[in-house]
Length: 255
Ligand SMILES: Nc1ncnc2c1ncn2[C@@H]1O[C@H](COP(=O)(O)OP(=O)(O)OP(=O)(O)O)[C@@H](O)[C@H]1O
Ligand SMILES: [Mg+2]
View 1 (cartoon, helix red, strand yellow):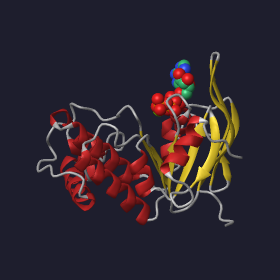
View 2 (tube, helix red, strand yellow):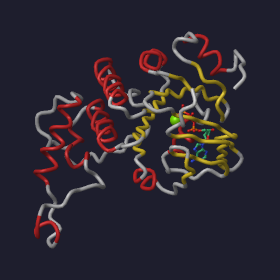
View 3 (cartoon, protein in one colour):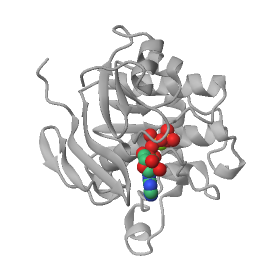
């Protein structure tokens, strides 16, 4: 298999004072795949994802998009490159409604002079599109997209965040623990959504502690340990027990 990775990292190092969060970590995401990233608490998964999404600038190493080195200094840089992220700490604005959350930071202006001169937002247009998109994704059964996000359940809020990433990610969608706070039914929906996103051709990076979820949807599994990639396995090549063994260091492998 010689395809160019969509997103690749080589030798990433990130230190926080004495703590080495990333210790020469490598990473690669292939076209059209769901790549799970697993690892113990503190292994450096979120740090890795923050580097790949522009939230953190690594001290060393390089990141390549479609084989070309990129420099991302802020999450906006990553978004501009088509990398859309749902963070572990949920980034929705509770007081805003669902449609506004979907278009947060990308608000559309009303057509004509109302938009260009008076800076009026195209609220109804955004609601129509938001509604269409939420229905397509089947993620929410919310009737009223004007409903404030703070009145939604945790799972529905997560649905909004995931929908936003799926809507705007054009190259890569990254999800850090998207099902952590969800019930069984809502988790199943989010997993289905992740598969839908993949099936539409967008590769997905899924960080999760939930082994059954990982083994259900991942094409490949990046196992992170002590700040770096310890192994890449697949649900076919390894059992959950073996993967957890590599994650905890009970089983050693060649990276
Ligand atoms: N902003 C920060 N300041 C100081 N130390 C940090 C910071 N962010 C992460 N670390 C440290 O870096 C290491 C890796 O943290 P990271 O959040 O990447 O782990 P993780 O694999 O995502 O863990 P979890 O499974 O708990 O989410 C930890 O030791 C953590 O304490
Ligand atoms: Mg984390």
